[in-house]
Amino acid sequence: MPLSMARKGEQNTIKRVGGKEDARRFLESLGFVTGGLVTVVSEMGGNLIVTIRDSRVAIGKGMASKIIV
Image (cartoon, rainbow, N blue to C red; front, top):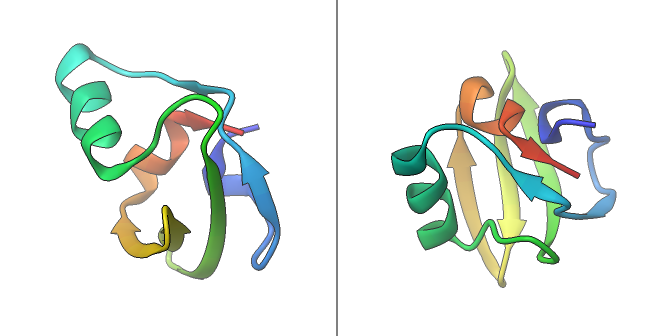
């Protein structure tokens, strides 16, 4: 399922990062890599704040839909 559908507070493992090459590289630079652990902290209007690699990152709904957990 896409990260945008993950439950708040639940830790998920990233299975795949989709999208165009530039988008994938950007997400990988933030720590969104296959096998990485990500937790949704909050969601507002489809935009997410997540914890990844001991950091909090805000991502938009479009980017979150490209991350499969």
